[in-house]
Image (tube, rainbow, N blue to C red; front, side, top):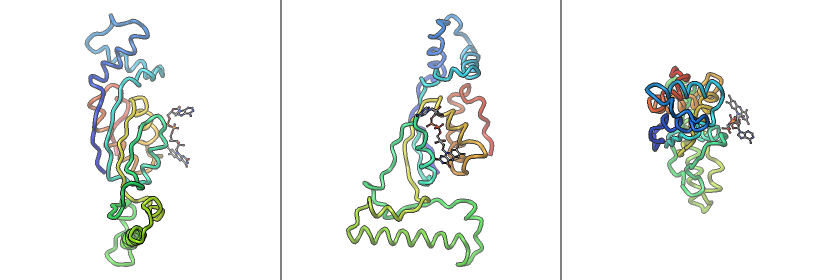
Length: 202
Ligand SMILES: Cc1cc2nc3c(=O)[nH]c(=O)nc-3n(C[C@H](O)[C@H](O)[C@H](O)COP(=O)(O)OP(=O)(O)OC[C@H]3O[C@@H](n4cnc5c(N)ncnc54)[C@H](O)[C@@H]3O)c2cc1C
């Protein structure tokens, strides 16, 4: 999995404070430390629309289609994802879940071996279909959820908080949790007040 920050609103927490204080015309309260008090107050009071003034975009690659399918359910976010119609998957990478990797016992009967064998067979069938004139948009029907994809995800900080609440907790699936952790590691230092209540753990 590879996570790369593409862009973030400059002076993001200053922008959020300025936007929020417009509601109350309380610019005279802007001082050292006022952004922290103000942003904590709006989050506590559920006035989170103010957080929508800050955006962050990430390029995310080396994740499975199984992860991306969960991600694109987040309707407030914007996505541009590698197409399996316009791009051939003639050498697709795939994700191996740790639970499967752990099953390695060193011989051909192991789950890991069988898993990798299945991926090779899928690749062979896909390539044969394309060779024999099947369009990628139809050949892709045999591709697995494990198939790697890449996408650019842009959303505002209110939505990032929502994604982390839903996807960076133990009820969420391991791969999306791992992705959230990597994104939080980047976002927290850039917007420490907005993400203060998210702790980076396992
Ligand atoms: C642990 C877990 C298990 C899941 N299991 C399943 C499953 O088995 N099957 C399944 O189909 N999905 C499942 N989901 C996906 C889940 O149902 C949501 O589709 C997904 O998490 C996106 O959440 P959301 O709609 O709150 O977020 P977003 O789409 O990111 O929206 C953010 C917020 O905006 C508001 N909003 C957005 N669109 C609307 C709207 N049209 N009307 C009103 N308010 C809106 C809501 O307040 C929403 O919470 C699961 C999610 C999690 C975290």
